[in-house]
Amino acid sequence: MQHRLLTATLALLGVMSLALSAPRGVQTTIDTRLNDRALSGAAIGVMVQSLTTGEVWYERNATTALIPASTAKLGTAMLALEYLKPEYQFTTRLLTNGTRNGEKLEGDLYLCGAGDPSLVSADLVAMIKSLAVGDEGAGIPPLKQITGKLILDGSFFPGNGALLGQGWAKGDLLWYYAAPSSALSLNRNEVKITVRGGAHGKPGQVTLDPPTTLFTIKNDTVSSNKVTLGAINVTRTGTVVRITGNVAPGAELSERISAPDPGRYLAEQLRQALQQGGVTVGAVEFSAAPQGLRVLVEHHSAPLGALMQTMLKESDNHYAEQLHWTLLALYSLAKPLDERYMALLQDFFNHSGMLLWGMQLVDGSGLSRMNRLSPAALTRLLAYMASSPTYDVFYAALPIGGQDGTLRRRLNDTPASGNVHAKTGTMRGVSSLSGYVTTAGGERLAFAIMLNGYGNSSAAARKLQDDIVAYLAGVND
Image: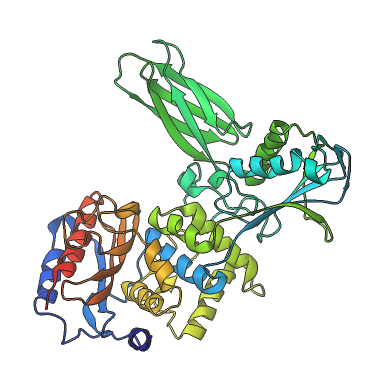
């Protein structure tokens, strides 16, 4: 622990000069890689720091604030582990103001959402089943009727209705990766559209998973034996979803889109679960639950430490946004909603000793181009987490080069395979990689490699990142 505290202290002091103890050739080798003509004109920031000594091995534009894309999730993870703790669980509750009378529940049924990012339709079915089957041994008959209303409470999250990240691009909002957040979230607030090709010249068959009436489907697809597989295009205007394109007979093509009204989406799936369980209920309403209700069933998510694996390894935007809004629901409540996240970051930096330098985060996922991080800020964050009691959880949740997550197909057959634990970040013109790697000589390094504004595909940016990390992993000095 003393070693970790030394590492953190050196990192938090913001050591920025290139260390004399960096192995010979590091600066020249990385400089050469950064001169790749394929990345001409790109803004590139790099920082590499030893966690063993705290000294900086390499830096270029380290204090330049750049768009981080999904490496912003490192900040979300840090705050969630710091404030919520790895043991935190999301609890979804079914409650009532009524009483049981044989097979009837005389009163209303409430569902209180707490923003569980992992809640799926099967969980609702299990919750209703536990109510519907009764308990013969305890003399409780099966539940067949709820005489009152079905009332959903999404008031745990601040704001009203579907919650979107600040600065999200309008063109992203159709798709699953930009699904809105809500305390009443289900199935990542996404719907899978599948088109199966039929007889030549006929429309394809469209199915929705899960089935939902949220949308009116306008199916303009055509089955065609002139294509090997085909392609579909999905657009949405209001609640009308139009699907166009050609699909080969027997072929299936799918797209995942967002559910723009999470509360209604969950209510629809909950009503279906009640019907499946043979339970009737009255009309659906949305309002805050009063105090003093009786808990009927509770569903607990996996602990935050386990959910973190999905958020970081798979770069799951919905998990990150649900954590973001959970933090805003519980902390910095004296601030206006649009100021809470930065206020929470400032509070964290005040008690951790870190500097709020080169960092602006407006969402949890990194989808907004208003986010800014510098390589130095990311490296300091990683150094801090390396000294944190939650480091083991954080480290295990990062993608591993050549093995899993968003790095499963990168860094194979290099010294970094199975070694580097790092978070990726990609959007148009933006590519980042930031994490930890251990050299062949046993030196533990934190690094951040960020690129903005390159004109070509992200392949050259990823190759640069991989080449640098693979080189660092092979250093033996």
